[in-house]
Amino acid sequence: MEESVPTLADAVGSQPTLADVARSAGVSTATVSRVLTGSARVSEETNRRVQEAVSKLGYVRRRAPWTHRPETGSIAAIITESSERFFSDPFFARLFHGASGALAPAGHQLVFVAVRDRSEYAAAARFVRRGVDGVLLVSSHGPDPLMPLLDTARVPTVLCGRPLAEHGAPYVDTDNYGGAQAAVYHLLAAGRQRIGTIAGPSDMAASQDRLRGFTEALTATGLEPVADLGDFSLESGERAMTRLLRRRPDLDAVFVASDLMAAGALRALRRAGRRVPDDVAVIGFDDDPVAQHTHPPLSTVRQPVEEQGATMARHVLALIENRTGPGRSTLLPTTLIRRESA
Image (cartoon, rainbow, N blue to C red; front, side, top):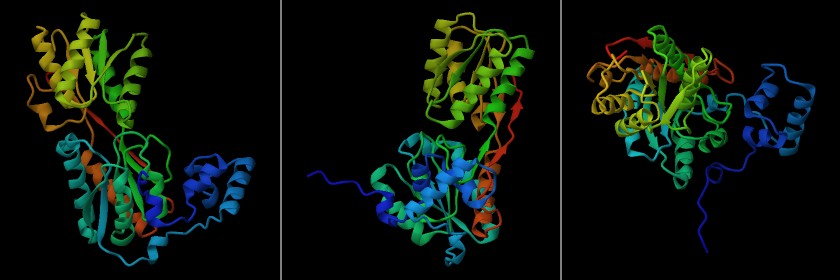
């Protein structure tokens, strides 16, 4: 007989959670939270369904249960990612540097927990319940099933980035949508009319927001967007740029959803004999160190990565001290950085 894989719920018990109430009532966890806290008005019908689900499941709302736990001085940075590329991405080094800097004055330290697949959920949950005061959850791809299950562990949790699936926990993100629009506006102001994009993986919220910002800014002017996909690696950017040139040989600009992919795009443009920015202007995203060392240096959209990590840390500390109730999400501004590529 095939052995079943333990789940997070197995590790932390079978008490009904906010997510259970939401499923029973047919609403989001955020809506359940609004009903139970009275933080916003909902319809009488929605209120009735939530209250019935609460009664049926025997859900008991606990107000900041973590305030009665002995403090450990540790905050778990849980990373649900199996790709080796993830751990070499400078974005995450900068993110956690910002988080640790904000936690240190409060006497807390980061503890890293890597969760690579479902078989590791149970161990992660046991660790969270026994050993940390709060959680910073970094989940890059898809609607991570660990997010709603963390409700059961009853530990203050803050998410890195907007989750693809709505969840009651607060998140901290940067304005990916607005950053992409700023890049397009700059290219249009420079007289570019045939603008393409290299988007990131479609199962990432940041990629979706950057692609949506690009598309809406361009179509608002009556221009037709042309897009290809990469995986945030240099090689994928080079391949995507090659495909775009085959489809639109007259392309005169490209917005690329990461600087590393943009560096690959520059390589493909050189091989095709296209001058940057004379023939094709290029704008990346992130303002990674690589952006200043390409030829020519990349125009890019800077996101405040260290501030994102620090804000996540401050949010989780506020939740631990029960200063912010259910918690609020934060969107940090992005800035267009102009260099020689556009």
